[in-house]
Image (cartoon, rainbow, N blue to C red; front, side, top):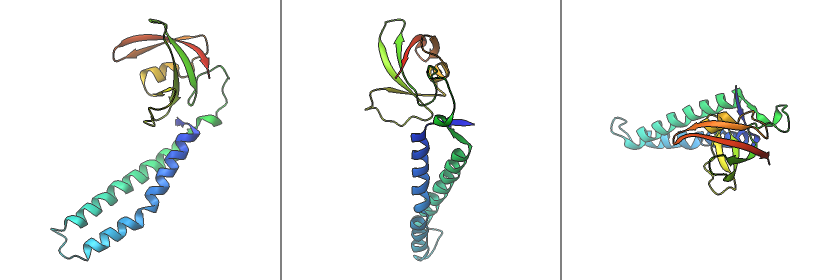
Length: 154
């Protein structure tokens, strides 16, 4: 079972709804391309069929992911424990720098936020999962092993 945040679930559902709503558009593209004649050398037809196959595969992937995911907000956990969706203030024990990190199931690609997104499957995310305020966690990062103290859950 995969844990995701409420926002991630909503985003996945929105993407799924958009893909399902696009089915008639692709079907119309295929029909129009088929009406042009010879299908062997019809690039529009083959492109539309490829798009249809990719979108149907994505629909199946999203449906399966939503069916097997549990929203982290629905899970009972102690208030001082880091879990999916938590924003934590960490102190790097090497240089005493402090930053805010948000533990997410899937990165949104939003770099404008005040906190740094960390996926639960990343080394730092795995180290943070279920850590408590006051603990020091160790993460084996690409640039070496780092230690972070969990200062607060914001």
